[in-house]
Each structure stands twice: as structure tokens, then as C-alpha cells.
Amino acid sequence: MLDADRFDALTSRIATSVPRRAALGAGLTSLLVWVGRDDAAARKKRRKRKKKTCAAGQTKCGKTCADLATNSANCANCGTSCGGNACINGVCECRAPLVCPSECGCALIVGGAIACTGDITTTACEENEDCPLRSVCRQTGGGLFCSEPCPA
Image (cartoon, rainbow, N blue to C red):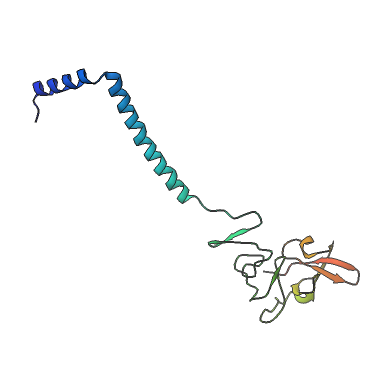
């Protein structure tokens, strides 16, 4: 241990060999480097915690992003499977093993596929994408019209 006299002698020698401004500058530089490292570590930690978002037109379904208009495992809603059949504008194609809900039926739609659809609406269409999600474009005696969505 240093007694008071020895401590004073040591600090006097250091003070006379290093100018105060240089010592202060070195201390501030060390402090800024230390703070900068801490700040970089905090930024890295925040980036890891940042939730990943889905691209436009996609929805987060569990840990993946899905286009609910075309994804046959998440057709119109997360977890709604088309049983291996295609998903067309959020409507499952109507082929075995898929059975349409009782409120809906299989109908020929634009593009030649057969899909589970509800009643016809008064909304005219030319393509399936012209209809709202969960609705498809159907041929009727009066032209092409969007269907009512089937219950999910």
C-alpha cells in the first residue's frame, strides 16, 4: 500500500511528465471508444430482436410469409389447406381429396379450373384477380361475374 506521502510523490511525477490536456484527451478518447463499443453491441442486439416483416402482398403465417391468394397451404387464411390442390385467388381448386363446404359447390371458373365457389354476385370480372380475395370469376349465362366467398 502507498502511504499519503508516496502517493503524492507518484502523482506529482505523473502530472509533470504528461501535460494535463494530453491526459484529459487520452481519458476522453478511451471513454468514447468504450461507449462506442457498447453502442455497437446494443445496435447488434436490437437488430436480432427486430421482428421480420413480410413483403407486400404477403401475410405472416407462423414463421413463414405466405401469399394468401396463391399459397395452397394457406389459402385465403393462414392454415387453410387445399389438400394439395391449387389456391386460386384465395379459393381452393375443387379436386379430390378436397370437398367443398356444404354452402358451396364446385364450379368452372375463368382459366378452366374447377373451384369451390358460392353464389354469383353482380360484380363483373374478366379474370379471377378482378374479384376480391376468396372469390373467383365464374361464367354464367349473362357473362362473367365474381362469386360469393365460401366460408373458411
